[in-house]
Image 1 (cartoon, rainbow, N blue to C red):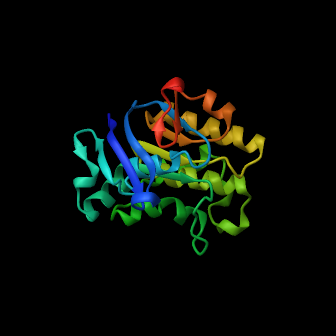
Image 2 (cartoon, rainbow, N blue to C red; image 1 turned 90 degrees about the vertical axis):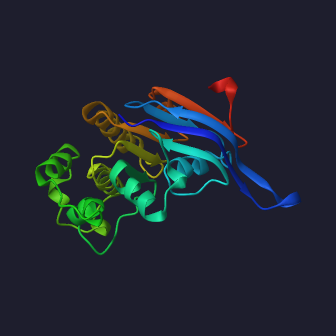
Length: 224
């Protein structure tokens, strides 16, 4: 069981009269094996928070712990290793590599970590996500919903402890959105993973185990 903790997290851009506090002293513990939704207006700091917690963007001040390891005390190689082995990422824009096929996109994080994919596990994901007929195709041959399913499979291929999702349904219609969310919630239950998701969709947020509202770089205590 991996626990994420954030202590006095700050992300500051600019100086003096141009200073912008994208994050302004956030304390937070992410519950393991739960779905946590992060909501807030555009520019509130929620994406910055997700990127800092996920080891993608170094905070100006503060600490991010995975269990007892402070991520930002690690060197770049060790931090990259944790991202590859412990975290899975799903983005609104899918971020698939256009010149390799679906299967190779899915197993890429595992191969980059110098390991061999568990083919039985990967094919199980592919079948559950309903993309078994697409594995030889390239991303530009897929619909948006199919591309997002590939992105989900890729995020799960390394059996991560935590899945970070930044508006993963933002480009999808309502039917596909429901299908994708059902799959992600199934992953949390089936694989005992932790899901941290930014969303503007109130209906999605309401299905979360916990909702964290960010306002002006801080947690909105009224909605906490």
